[in-house]
Image (cartoon, rainbow, N blue to C red; front, side, top):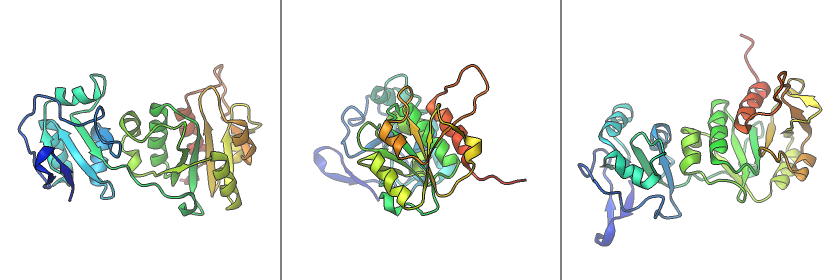
Length: 272
């Protein structure tokens, strides 16, 4: 059960299920331009539907068009939060005309992330070294969810927050792969090394190919920002620097694509 404050009348308790208003022509009173810093904004079918299905995600406000709400209730059944029925332009006013929201906008609590020492001892992890583009980070989260990654390590600084564009690009992956926020990435890699993790840095100049490294557990795959790559101290705290063995003329690709290739190459696969 969720409560929120709606103006001077005090807190209101949301009822699971149907819409509260038929249509609101103006933009809702809160959102990315004025929402609390304690809330994150999710929009689009996969981020919103996955968050609604995740009992661990606290919910505050759901805006939906008539068609989007019908699809939600058809696929999820009774919702955990009352929906405000709006026209698409009300959500456009909050997100901007270029956001592909598919008629859904949700304000929710951030998901709590585990501490580094709470991650499983046999895990496959990702670590992001100052990757700041939310589209790239979101796409990496989505791929990580597809490969069963146990957590993504990132730093509080030089990292995008898990809201808005990042959440949309993650396509629901945030509900399945926790973000582990650390103060210093190199220190985190040192700690993981002491626990027996193989630390694999992806580097276009690495002497070893991904094929030669092969599937590893426990392991952490370290990805650097496009252009800059891995910082020197990050490189120094990797056990191996591996490269994707490209055969064409172009030898560099988007970091989210590189993450997908690396996870495939280093994941144990059935012989069938």
